[in-house]
Length: 352
Image (cartoon, rainbow, N blue to C red):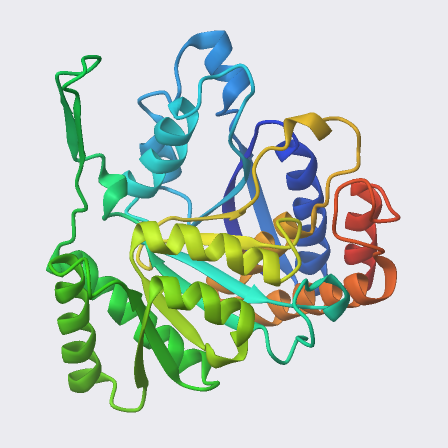
């Protein structure tokens, strides 16, 4: 029996509720496919910070580095100032664990939940590969004359050949493995960001031409991409882009696939510890009510299984999610699903 050690960070707000259902479904898949999943919980989040004034203990990153995968619920607490937990937990783990890929499948399971006219599952099925360790999110920059009428704020986008190229190589490999349209679209802004995206575009074509001649290369400006997401989402197979643009377009992607309740993502270190999460927030206003949609967290668990190489188990979870969404769920919105949070978890687990 294969055995895997998984760190679990339920986090804040409704995070523990959706994480509980994700673990329930993971256990159902593990039982069916003879896997042993060993969970180690960590209480990192807002409540711990308010209690100890410590975002992450010094030992945290080293401990988490021992796990192949982390399941994260949500980070964000109404009594903690914005940025403290996000930078101190999410960004710190992404950077220090070198999770240099943010992987976001955008896949519609039921046309009832798509806000786009005449678009269904056949038209909305693509993946965004977002660079996750560089760009504007490195925190490079600063203030001059802060708090005065002459104040200057500088935020710099850091793009290295190493960082860009490893992201591109991952995206090309993923496109090849996905084996659908075998088309990779670079999303950028070459007409304005002429330094950063000159590097991205040159590396894109050099790597593609030299090592991936079987993959069709395409380019789109980020603003045009947001239009095509709405008008012609079927044009996309795999997208690769930088940290900031990836952050923005994946939220639009979540909406066209049905909303935050179904959208999951992975922070990937192909040679180290990867972290999987629902991409929505902690939704504190729904905490403890049993109405939050756990499907995004369950889909994060499916991505975790796939990352571990347990393809059959991952496929079984996705099939169970599709069956549940199409046959049992009224809407994907919190409080309107027709079932409680735990009941949705039960339905998916039973479908496995």
